[in-house]
Image 1 (tube, helix red, strand yellow):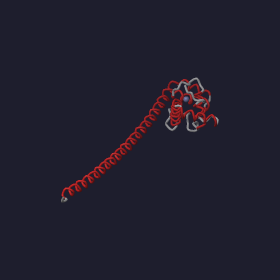
Image 2 (image 1 turned 90 degrees about the vertical axis):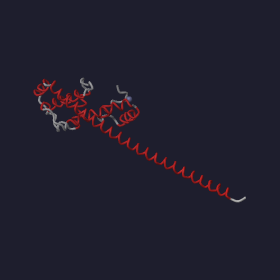
Image 3 (image 1 turned 60 degrees about the vertical axis):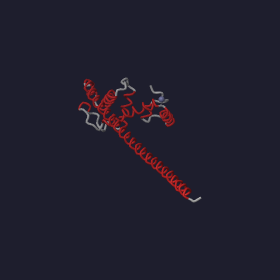
Image 4 (image 1 turned 135 degrees about the horizontal axis):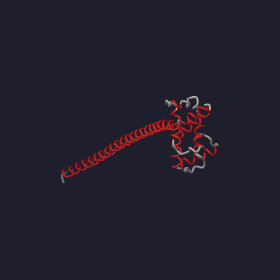
Length: 196
Ligand SMILES: [Zn+2]
C-alpha cells in the first residue's frame, strides 16, 4: 500500500488542502513507489475519461457527454473508490461509475433493468476499458521507443563527432612530430655536409 502522508486519490482529484498537497508533492518526488502508484492512477483516470468520446454500448447509453461533466465524473470516480467495489479493476471502476450515474439520472424502474444486465454491461465495459488501456500502454511504449531511438541517434552522432575530433588531434600531432623530425634530419644532414 501507499506510504504517502495523504491519500493519492485525494491528491489526484485536488481534494487536498494546499499544505497537504505540498507534502504529497514532496513525498512523491522522493518515493518511487508512490510515484508509480500516482502514475497508474493518472493513466486509469485519463483512460476512463477518454472513454466518453468513444461509442458506448446501448445499455450504458446513459453515460452521455452531459452526464460526464468533469465534476460528475469525479464524483462517480470517488464513489467507486469509497465503495466496496474498490478492487483495483478498471472495469469495476467504470461499471460502478456507470451505475452510480445511472441511479442518479434515471428513475428507479430503469435501475433494476440495468442491474439485471450487470454481467453483460460489465463484460462490454471490461472489453472497452481493456482495449483503451492496451491502446494507451501501446502508445506510451511507442513513444518511449521513439525517444530511446532518438537518444541513441544523438549519442551515436556525438560519438562520431568525438572520434572525428580525436582523429584530427592525432593526425595533427603526427604532422607536428613529422615536421620536427624533418627539421632535425635537415639540420643533421647540413651538419654532416659542413666542411671541417
Ligand atoms: Zn511513498
